[in-house]
Image (cartoon, rainbow, N blue to C red; front, side, top):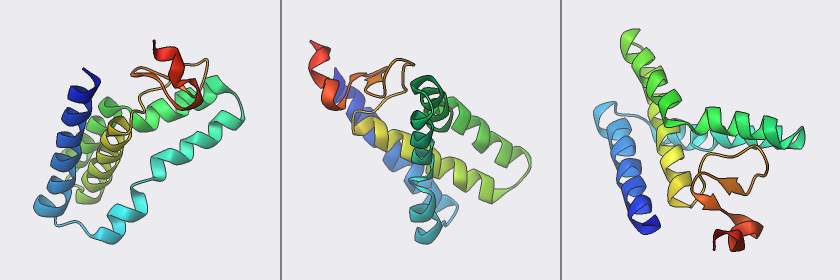
Length: 123
């Protein structure tokens, strides 16, 4: 099942990236410059695991990114739409890599299972 989910996320990564580049004629500079910005939320894990999980989940939640894209559409702001598409593509990229939304107890505990050093807990 995990392979199917990763393939689905890969398809969405391609869809959101293609929409950014083909429909909105986005630049590689903006795409590469913003693609890993949501991962800055990792820094909140230095404060507490719960705060880190909340920050990570906000910047990687597809519903939040969908709202950002809709806000850009509603306010006719292509830059906001592009940012939403880039962040949505990033979320898909993370899911392809096996990283899901975080639980409050540990960075390694995600809605897709355990990752990193704790991967063995998936049994």
